[in-house]
Image 1 (tube, rainbow, N blue to C red):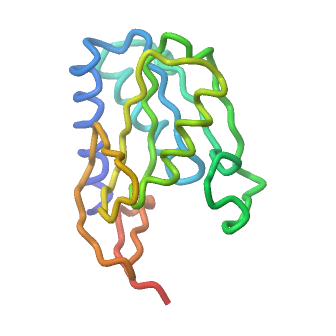
Image 2: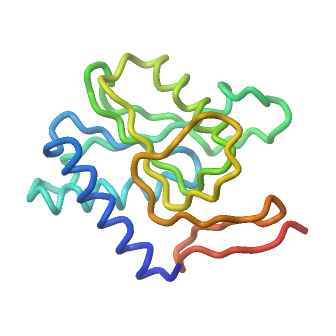
Length: 168
């Protein structure tokens, strides 16, 4: 995917979010550290634009689910990753945003983390790339691109688009 393809996918997902939720009232966009943070900002900006709302009117947060992972201790802890939930999620529709969905374990940890802040009315998952290989029964609600991969491949979402590479 090129950078333009990513922008179009974000715009499409913003329209889908508005349609599914009958507007953007009570919607809170939360980017998962680290790959989902920038995508969450872009998605919230597009939702605001489409809804003709004030820029920044859609609450945006960040979530570091590291401490909720079932493989904690096997993965590095990133000190720059923070959790900032801008509003009480109770009764809100949380749009959880990540760059790549793979096994589903990070999303499972994020669900636990969100519930430690309150009880949302709903949590919906938006990902730029769904690469398959799920280990848990987790399915995204909004997908930029389904990109079947081999387990030895890596997917990188960046400013230039989406790159597919090999593990070294």
